[in-house]
Image (cartoon, rainbow, N blue to C red):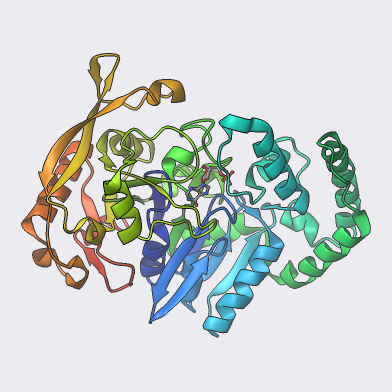
Length: 429
Ligand code: IMP
């Protein structure tokens, strides 16, 4: 057996998609375990740029089975558009499967997402407006409509009527027009007709792949500190991006996970509201945003930028029991004379080296930095460890020492080829 979880070790957008694409070629199955089309993965392969929001990036490898797991919330319209767009770019893709237990996103979820954000006023979360939170609210309230029900011709109209009545009452409370049943039913029946062949009970399929010795990759979305329980609540997403989410969202047990790679940038970014101790609101942050094209794949919003926060990263390493780190975007830091790394926080005059769980406390900490020499030159041509500048190697060494987790892979550019494996043995456990 050989299973690997790829998890975002910071606040999302760590370039997991690229890694899933690179390692997807070695896997027989890639299973995404959480989130919906709030995620955005850009993959550059063979000179083409692919954008994924729902489909695991592993679909680009024809022999691979790409699974949308039970922990996901799926917008059928978005999924079909993504599938058609990808097919236009590449005729031969892997096989797509959708868990019958994945929840379906409806227009009322998107409307309520916007209305709830508006109602939060100053305290808005800065969601992606994709209806993700409201769809997971329905799941927890046990009224959500799952993919298996969507494709059940007899059950779907009954379930939709039931739920839409409740949602229309809510929309009316917000002063909005109710959604008409018949057109919504017809729209979703058309999606169901196309999606039906892909919808399966995926847990036994994934378990069989794992127990028959196939290489199975579990793809996370968002990042550790956007996790509903372990993140900076309430400025989080409504699912479980942490590695444990792979068990919850796919039907694989904890002892069947062999390796966990945590993807982190060589600096830090975050989208939306919430505390961010190492945030750079000056020209350094602006410079990194511009050079790194740090704008959301899903929303186009400029990402907030900060120095690498090792206090947070060490916590993430433990939350996810990481086997190895994958450090991305080292090329973007090129050209800085000095680079800062957060190695502690000052809280009310005392030094702490842990991440406070409460957002009000976290927003009061001040980062304590250690300064490193920067590096020069275009790192994108580096193909081996020996091609990397000594300063970059020192930086990576310190990351590994501080967190206690070795660096397995580094990424020096967006292309598949711009990847350097430092410790192959950490990848599949
Ligand atoms: P939601 O997931 O749309 O409900 O948004 C909740 C929070 O998670 C917001 O701060 C979003 O900006 C953030 N978020 C959601 N998905 C992503 C992602 O893929 N990358 C980075 N941030 C995300």
